[in-house]
Length: 206
Image 1 (cartoon, rainbow, N blue to C red):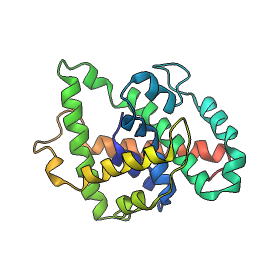
Image 2 (image 1 turned 90 degrees about the horizontal axis):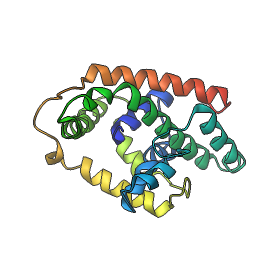
Image 3 (image 1 turned 60 degrees about the horizontal axis):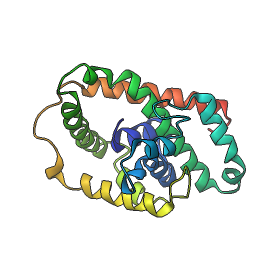
């Protein structure tokens, strides 16, 4: 699965100036890690009908519709809900389009961790020169909600962990990307944002 900065970059590509709540929502599903690392629990917060099977567009639409009334009554919750769904959608595309080369490598898991960690800081630096330089500020300012089996406070706890991690430049690996390339990630960000734009338009959100 991609790490937070990929999700935030997609949010910026999708909305140009995403709200703090959309940013927090796009982090939220992974907040289960502050409670447990059990795959079965992560599957629940990622709306998987069963472990290992990603929610389809139709199932994501059903989740959106089940929260639509609350969302229409609370614009911040609407943004959070859409960010939450965008995270899950992005994870699905990433798993099938970006991750496979790592599965083919005997040291794939450790190489993957190095690559995605490096990517976090590469995207953060790139963003600091562009329109999304304030993404971490938005992340810290956004309101979370109880959603997807996660508590608001769990999201805040996970958010703090991620902000602290990204603010410590010593966490960046010294080497270059091994399998991924920045060009491939930029293309992934662009195409995934466009797919999400079409999905949200179909639901008459954006």
